[in-house]
Image (cartoon, rainbow, N blue to C red; front, side, top):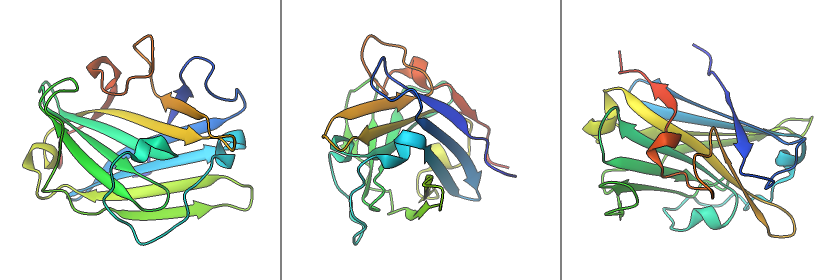
Length: 183
């Protein structure tokens, strides 16, 4: 089944009105596949150079794609970060911004980056969820987000919804994408 891309929108006046940022999440067996597509001015975001992928902190300080996952109705949640360079991280939280720690069961995702002739950038990351039973099988509430760095170093914050006065991807009322239980 093809991905259903949802539109991300910038927080307040953070982004160029002509920019297009779309994202999707789907299950492929025990993998969770995230896909981000940038077009128009968004495709000109500053990208870290491709390198040997590593688990790194603070990816959000530059262009980074994020997904926040919570078992439907549960309080704990996980934050998945992936840089277009292939760097990544997964954090677990006990509740809203509480108890943050690296998720030791997470493995490096397979990351693909493609720039089309028209300039559109697509980044896809496949995270193996087999070792994280809480996320591998049941229905999930998901927030899809992106942080884009402009040439002058400013950051814009993109999400399906922005339920707060400032960009805050951790708020549960922003987990509006529903992913059904694994087949």
